Amino acid sequence: MMPTARLDSSMRHKARRVRALRWIMQDLAGIARQPEQAHRTHLRATLEWLCRAQDASATAGLVAGGWTFESGWQAPSIDATGRLIETFLPAAEYLAWPELAQRACHMLDALLEAPEVASLGRLHGLIAAHARLGQRESLARALRDAQGMRIDARHPAAWHADAAHVLARLAALAGEDGLRGVARMHLQAACCAQTPSGWFADLAAPTPTATLARVLRSLAEASRLLGEAAGFDAALRAAHGLSDQLRPDGALCAAFDDGWTPGARYACVPGSAEAAAAWLRLAQMGGGAAWRDAAWRLLAWVKRNQRTEGDQLTLRGALPNAAPIWRGATAFGVDTLGAKYFADALMMDMVGIAIPPVA
Figure: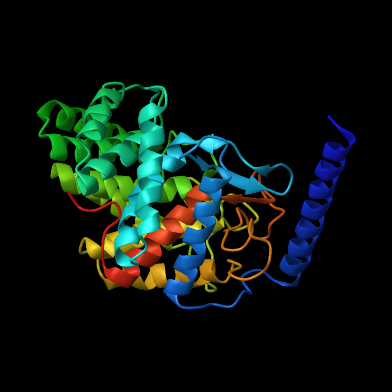
């Protein structure tokens, strides 16, 4: 490495340390203290940050998995890229922001060019591209990828629930009864792992809030598509267990053990955003206004943890992985998928749509 390059690297690390120290001092003074603004303001800031995450990726079209104070932008993520297609396409329409649709097309191109590996996130993206853009190639690729989504006892309930959701969507689009049967088997596998309290026995304890939110959302969506009332009941049990832990200030613990015992000493901002999106979807599916009220409290708390202003573009509009920032295994980082689900929840509340769209 040339001396100039070493100097540049040293300066970048020093700048990141200064920014980290500034964030620590702010969190010591109290978390969730940022100005709470209108949905559209937070949505715009979030999408702008996600665009920067795509621009920073080492692979054209793909999106970086996040950013950390230690190492900067993380490696490109196939899973996050696929799931973001679900977000960028409706955002382009409802915000009259055509650049987002172009970016989604670049994401799709990158997914189609990537090697075939089992990725539920990529399946989500391929299905969204076909559903909204009529991309036949993406549907064909999704059907090929789906062949690897067979029942495997080594997979936990979270994987089975997500697989049930995405395969049920694909079956509805492609008219594939065989896929519908596999989706039903995944749904049953996830439901069988649920404990009386609504938690899931085969998940590593403590289980991150984001994982629990994704399980309950996936169970609800798969149950609707497959006509399985038992799966929706399982989703409601998990949703009630999680919502009962909502604190008066609108925060959720970052992880839970069976019986919904808090398993962390901090709150997870991305997980809270995903839980808000899940609860809004339950409200849309007829679960009652209480889910919307809970989602509003959670969204307000997430808003108060997002910095929508400042000259540091890598942090402006990002969501910290933890509150306070120094807690947990992903401390001192910001998450791409958390931003995605925050944008989803904001749009779902603003426009009354479902993301991903209802088949």
